[in-house]
Image 1: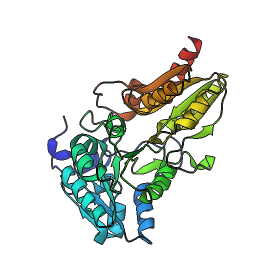
Image 2 (image 1 turned 45 degrees about the vertical axis):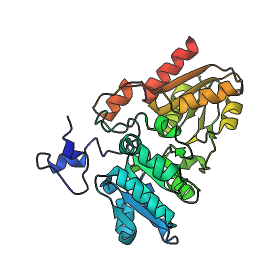
Image 3 (image 1 turned 135 degrees about the vertical axis):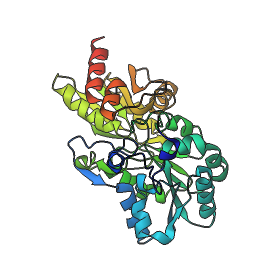
Image 4 (image 1 turned 90 degrees about the vertical axis):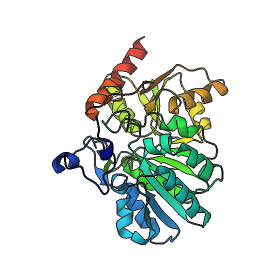
Length: 345
């Protein structure tokens, strides 16, 4: 069990927890770079850079600035940073008020707290009024080993259902940096998932550029089409390399914008060459990218072989992330094994 007082660490450290353990806590851990170059705090540094020329950029956090990388912005621009304490409803309401006064607020917390605790305040104070509040949330899906209290496995399903809200699930440090800059200029509210700390650079080698509402082919292939978002695009790319060694050619279509979904590109790619279509997401199998893609294919009359790689519709265990990713099918080895089985079946 996690002590109730240990969920926030900006100002309070329980005496019973050694400092050395805090430094490696699963709650605040970033996704491992897995042999790739890692970039430190891309979200925070992007905000700092934008704020040099934009006085309307402000940052707010619910006592979690250090663990959403907003502390980088707070240190550079303390006069534009607002620490709202352990009060997500107040966080969202204050962000709405700032937006009404002409600011572009970036409000940060953990994804579970935004999606589960602050939903009604986001709906009534922000989304209904179509205000330009950017809600950027760490620990999406299975990126922490601290169990159901911190694992936001259903946040995309929750946020997809809210009118006026754009929903983004970026892959890596490159895309977080680019997407942060794009959403600052995007009218209306945005919910964006965050990887924090030292974040892998995955898409840099492909010359990738984030475009809101656009899915892009990162790798082409003839046997399987992965449609993925978030860090599962990294896993899909790695699985494609592993499967190529066994003679299986895989394409990867990265779809970072979950809402509005790029249905046109998804349907066009899914209908090419009779490939097995496999969605891959760091989210529950219910209500996320997979079901969004399935709906788009059905509405377009695209009848293709279709499978989902996603988290189960259940509360997940606590533990070490590599173990949990193996257990719940998000690891490269799990993905390759399942794809082989589907192709052989």
